[in-house]
Image 1 (cartoon, helix red, strand yellow):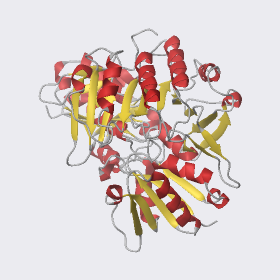
Image 2 (image 1 turned 45 degrees about the horizontal axis):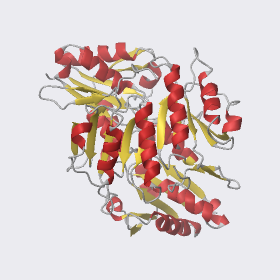
Image 3 (image 1 turned 90 degrees about the horizontal axis):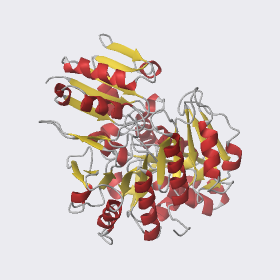
Length: 253
Length: 253
């Protein structure tokens, strides 16, 4: 099989956060598949075709790219952030497993990227400085009860928690419900960070507390980091606040 | 204050995985601080000084770099992976909080990088495709009982788990003990990935199961990903195995 499929992460949005490995893989592809706004971030190259699809059509997009690669094409699927974190790499694997044998025979390369929680954390200080977890709040693909169970487990065990897909048009209540759930187990003063569109012109970083967080608007481009009971805030005159979680745990199990 | 401190992640080791933002920040610094092997990865620039220190001297290194920056220098601290994930950014914040007021007044910039779990996951498929957590197995800075509590919580709640700092010379038993603990709660067939030195010439990726994993050697450069009960393996003739965690959770809470 001469076909080749790469799955490439564009990071949160700033071109200077895209590793050279990803830029090279993008330039080498003959066909790009992806959600339209992600494709629009990739510099145009003559002769390279583009195949945009809707944000929620991951499986259909992955299958189309695999069919194209099976015909011998050099195909890339473009993803925001890191392709392995709530993005396209898992969809591609699902389609390979369910698809024809030939889809298992060609070269598949996943090219990592800066996922949103790393970019937001870096802008805020070091909130992920100790043990942490990442939870998608979308209940499209898992029951809401399971999400609540994981939020409880994370808060009780002392993980810092990064919340991906905090809201959607169909489910605007998810983030507030999740924050209220976490607030049952963590102090009202626990630091919470809202990061939106990091590295882009419309970037916004807000540092608040669990008590205040429910009143802050979020959208699909927002990544929320909820601290643990050990997460700290450093006030700095004339500078942005730094939020960090110490490396040493002071609280006993 | 004209001082400037950046904290820069070099990723797992391959130069092509270092985002341009990090390369520019490295080139702009007048002085680099870091663990010697990380400093050795940075291209030399005439006039730029280098200050190597031992791997376990994070606090001392951060304070030295802050003192240097407070004198007006353009200083960078170099870190492997992402500086915010079990690396230097939290140490810098700790020193700023504990240090003199002037350390709060100058510009601090954290530059994100590809952390080991993202690079290992990308080489193996998409094991982090669903909710996941990252736990450091080092008990230098937290009690071992707390580590066990977090391993239990992660396995019970269905998180995929990335294990950082799996062993050390002083504590070679940590990883095996952790894997045996996880095996009390997850099937013996649960996929486990050992990733070492990803992107470097000595790279090694091994896919095994929880039952077999305890017999595999690991060192300080190893990152271990333990799947959830839903993580799957796709065998491919003549190609490396793909490991992934489906986006849809099939198990109810």
